[in-house]
Length: 76
Length: 377
Ligand SMILES: Cc1cc2nc3c(=O)[nH]c(=O)nc-3n(C[C@H](O)[C@H](O)[C@H](O)COP(=O)(O)OP(=O)(O)OC[C@H]3O[C@@H](n4cnc5c(N)ncnc54)[C@H](O)[C@@H]3O)c2cc1C
Image (tube, rainbow over all chains, first blue to last red; front, side, top):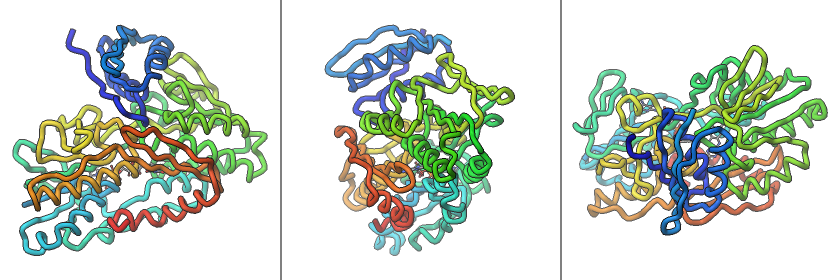
């Protein structure tokens, strides 16, 4: 498995982290891992909520130095 | 010193005009040559498409001749780039000409790609191109009642356009006296009704008060045009009578073909606007991969910073400013009210209550745009 693709959505209000993730997810292949970097604390809830609703996979979510690192895998 | 600007839209035009003015002496003496390559001899004011969709403007009002907008020292050619040869500091055009450069500015914008979503082209109306905006107007005019679904692809330029569209639809049918026969529903990709939190907080009670329904976490998967059903990635099916979509976007084909950026979005430094890995290539406007909204406003502020920096690189050997993520967007809240949203990388957007004067300001900006791209505003 290759390194996850990093999506740097720190310090962005529009389009915002989840919209950035959706955009990259559309172009990714099934099985690809993406790591979203976000400084928006809302991402901790809204990203897993969307991932669960669509049926992708949440790998991990952790905060390092005020940046949330949310790793997901495209499942379908 | 050869400066080549590729793209004659909002960003490219402001960069080129601003540079021409800052480098008047250098271009007159022949020390600097400023060239622009674009795909069209006309320049479209794209925000006007929303007015075309409601019969408030006709398409001819959206255009100016590109040459008339440019400073005379800019050598302008309608000859789009077919190939970027960044390793040789050259581009090749559709006409087969090679242009060499010392500094390259890429401002080729973005395009809608409805064909990438099954059934969308057959099943939905759009308004992000001239032809589709005119067609939508005709569909709206014929519409006597039923379910209108509005859905949004990702990514897309002008993130406030979908909200503006909803207010305009409400006002349009109200003015025709058939609002009670029209069911308006808005489908949005993320968990609130707009990506900017302040816009979502303001628009939600506004939608509620005028009977616009909404569903969030809804990403377009496909359209069954025959049976008029819109299907989402999240597994929801929606029946409609008229479907209006902001389709997903990509950058220009040549950007993807030459591997400048996946999806046509070029990896760009968020402050210097340099293309990552290339010191003499800069990227502005929609075609950057920056996490800022794809708007004329972002294109404008980026272009101003970049032109000042390129001019100072030529004059003193170093750039002088960083792009700070600044964006200022008008938001039309129907036919006679508007507000605006302003923010940058650090400052979250705030929103003022909509007012009539703000709407008049937006109407004046529709004309002021031409002064703005000339680099005079
Ligand atoms: C319906 C609608 C409403 C909008 N409303 C707003 C709004 O209210 N506020 C706002 O700020 N923004 C708005 N926008 C967005 C705004 O118009 C764009 O974000 C802006 O035009 C981007 O500027 P740009 O220079 O990056 O691209 P563009 O202005 O699209 O210009 C791209 C240029 O590149 C040229 N080109 C393409 N391919 C090549 C090639 N291969 N070689 C050379 N040249 C090439 C094209 O001919 C064009 O001149 C709206 C857009 C739409 C569609």
